[in-house]
Length: 209
Ligand SMILES: Cc1cc2nc3c(=O)[nH]c(=O)nc-3n(C[C@H](O)[C@H](O)[C@H](O)COP(=O)(O)O)c2cc1C
Image (tube, rainbow, N blue to C red):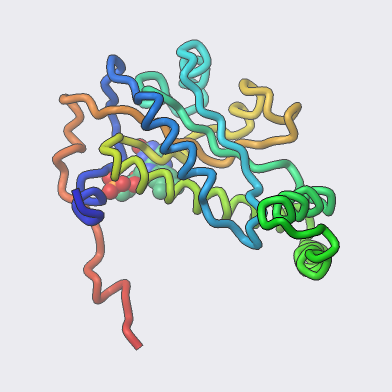
C-alpha cells in the first residue's frame, strides 16, 4: 500500500472489533514512531499512555462522551504534556543531546540558552499551548503510522481532560491529558469505513508561488 492509498484507507473509526488486538510487534513500531516525532527545539514535551487494561478503558467511557471506541479498541493512547516546562527540563534535554551526540554539555551551552530564552518570554498558559502544539504533531504521526500498518485509529478530542487526569492520576505524575487516540481494528458493521472522504480540492488549500 502506498502512502496515498493508506491515507485514503484510514478514517476516524467509530466502531472497533473488540476481539482483535494489535500485536506487540506493531505496537513497538507505533511506540517508536511516537518517539521519533519531531518537536520544537527537539525537546519532546510529552508522555503517551498506552492503555490495554480493560477496566481502565471502561472507566474512561463516561469521560469520553460515551464514545464506545474507548472500550472496544485494542489500545487507548492518551497523549499528555507535562504541567509545566522549566529550565531543569531544558537541562535534561541538553544532557540527552550531549549523550546522543557524544558532546559535552558545555558545548551545548549556546543552544541551551536559546531554548531557555525562548521559554522566558512565555507565561504558563503560553508554554502549555506550545507543548500542546507538539503533542498534535505526534498525533499526526500516530495516524499515519497506523494507516501504513493497516491499523485503525480514531483521533479523539471528545474527552473530558480533567476527568482523564483524575482517573489516570496524571496530576500526581506531573502530567495532563491533551488528546486521545484509540487504535485497533474496524468492526465490519462500521458504516463510516465506506463513507466518501470529505476534503477540499487541492486548489483551495494549496497555493504554488
Ligand atoms: C484533533 C481531532 C479530534 C477529533 N475528535 C474526534 C472525536 O472525539 N470523536 C470522533 O469520533 N472523531 C473525532 N475526530 C475525527 C474527525 O471528525 C475526522 O478525522 C474528520 O471528520 C475527517 O475524517 P476522517 O479522519 O475519517 O478522514 C477528531 C479528529 C481530530 C484530528
